Amino acid sequence: MFSWGLVTGVAMSKSVMNVPEAIGMSLLVYAGSAQLSVLPLFAAGLPLWTVWLTAAIVNLRFVIFSAGLQPHFSYLPLWRRTLLGSFNGDLHFVYFMQRYATPGHEPGKEGYFWGMALTNFAMWQVSSIIGIVLASAFPDSWGLGLAGTLALIPVMVTTIRSRSTLLAVAVASTVALLCFDLPYRLGLVAAVVGAIAAGMASDELAARATLRGIRRRKAEHAPAQAVAQAPAQAAKDRA
Image 1 (tube, rainbow, N blue to C red):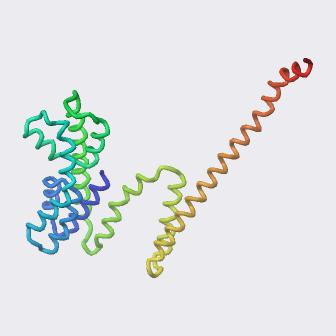
Image 2: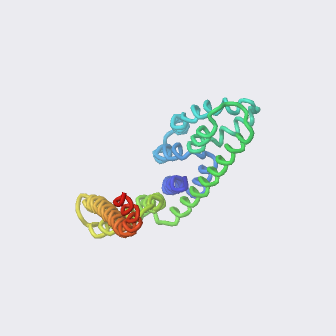
Image 3: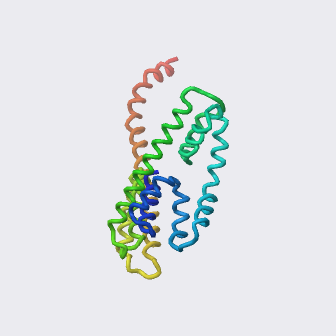
């Protein structure tokens, strides 16, 4: 969620919006897909009704989400259901439906939804505003590509969960820098191939090291097992 909000904030800041307008859109709209989809329409100067229609079409999934929540909160007054639907979102809707499969009133159900919804809202606004402010600090001549790359760094970092992945990232970064001047963006291809090769080699070496460790432990335990089994074997031979 943080990375997605950061990317959206960067995109808004580098569009036709200034910083206050981008922050206002983030606070009032609170719908990343819709925000990103209407930015080209603003840049093209299209009529406002096309912007509203596009955003409505993109957000049609929330009609389905609201229909799914209705049996769970049908006992609430209209204004509370309207407020609840305004803070609905993709992630916490999925988590809510996984936890509460049975419709109807249940103690703690509304609190569980609001806990996720408000946390999601706060995380989205913080990440979006950070993206807006950081992107505004870079000159427009640097291009949206740089800002987008910086925004995607947190996404990449969250995927580094093993040594092989870390090695693949390091190799890809190094190869991409060394091959930056290659034509036809071949540096990107070289970086991807290098990352895959490094990751596979690291996994293979780790698997071999694990296998050697297992064999070594078996070899160390074999004499002790033979000594422990010797009396039983001797008694069996005497019998």
